[in-house]
Image (tube, rainbow, N blue to C red; front, side, top):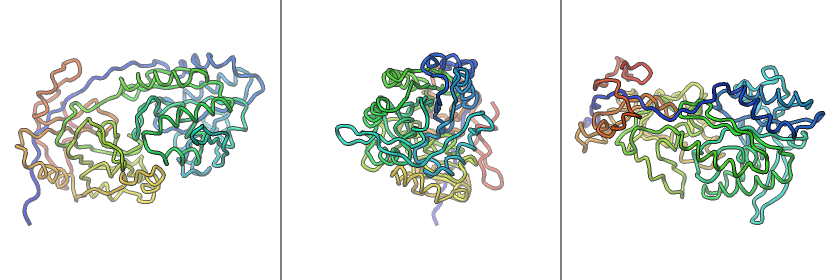
Length: 425
């Protein structure tokens, strides 16, 4: 058999600097922001605060603070699971997810209400239905709390945030089902139009939006009255996008990712970072452009859910061995983006995986091959680049060169030894 492997070029460690606005004390700021909504909280009432989104930094102390403000007004705070179809759309599954996030009555001192049944509360002129969980009718006031950020499957004036928490999260399995049944171009309109019905018909007094910076730190906490929620969320989304991390360059021959996983992105590898959607019938992003993507491992925190593996080209046997196929398939069948669960080519070792990717780039002289090597698609501050990328990194305010070119080596088991986590500057 012909040799289908080719060595990698040496790699240079760099550090990127991104904008870094930070909230010094998220709990104190949540308390301060909740004071804006406090006059709308009536003594003796029950106030539902939404929970269920994964990956929000400082969420437990922020929830504690919000609960404290509600209780100080003489009202009873409860936590409403607002998770769409996550957790399998069942009460048991919702509780398991919330428990894994530390969102429990024991930890936060407020009752956690899970629910899997709902009802329609209205419809738009063109037939979009506003669904609402039955649990939302057990409270006198609702305060959605969620992170505002760009989505991994669609783009619009609103994406992930308070509107989505109302429409899809509190919409339960039915709301999530409608959301995932539409083409991506229709989703922003759905979120805006259906959330208007919910804001009109449900006792949403306001919400709290959270924005994070490129370092996964809390950058802003902002309380919004119900009547200003949509307009202000549009502004916050635009600002959050200005804080997003990115790869050092937008055109690559190869991207090496040490780990993928649900703890890094809902799609395992962030579609905004890699420039791939792979949604049948939808156009791909114009940038970034990456010819091949190799992923070496699946994070333990993913518990076998390899959603997004279909966005990659080369993976290792180690990653394949960790996959829970049913969990992966269920996630993609729910969204209907089934190509994201398709398996790429896989190889026994890191070395064979990466050298095979290089073989597919054999028409390009090694000194011209443009590679970037990152730990995952969430933390992009430190990474490696090949020498061909270096001439593009002229912005000294953003890029710092940390090492000379280092050879890419592998241990006796074929595992990559040059890693972002253990490389030396």
